[in-house]
Image 1: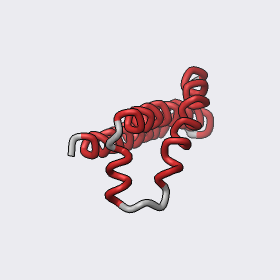
Image 2: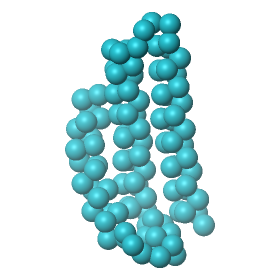
Image 3: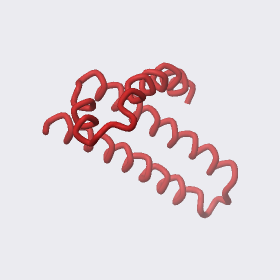
Length: 99
């Protein structure tokens, strides 16, 4: 989790600087903005590292605060949600990039 924390320390400001200028723009402008390779790369990296960080963090919380019989199911569910959101976000970026 420490590596992902350090990576997010760099990625989140980059993400904010690349996403901030487009807030409030029209749909066409946003699609054009995220069609840029550098913006899409920063967004994808932030999404991947952020969701992996979430998955490992929520696993620690589940291990600390849930009883044994439910623990494995909840960890599996948390991982499915994390990877599902990561996949959905990356698919959305790919659709924008190749449209």
